[in-house]
Length: 112
Image (cartoon, rainbow, N blue to C red):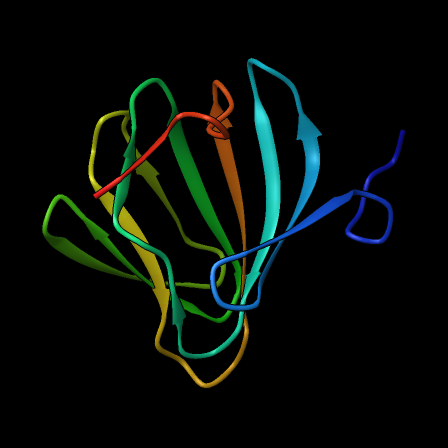
């Protein structure tokens, strides 16, 4: 089945952020997310899941284990399991990105 944000399961998180499950299985999760300008998430880690974030549009600021990384459209970053991290949108436009988790990260999040 062809999936898009028009027909995928939707959820809201954080401060008015959106997520759409494009693939939702126990072994692999692919989510498209949107963060409005000025939003961020809580620092956390995953016990079992590794993640790849791929920026579709906007600019993202990642903190991973105390290091800061700036990503723009068509750039990605890998977060290994157990690594403390968070993402923020300090820009003036929406941030849109894909987050691919193996295995799924839902239920595997430990907030700091």
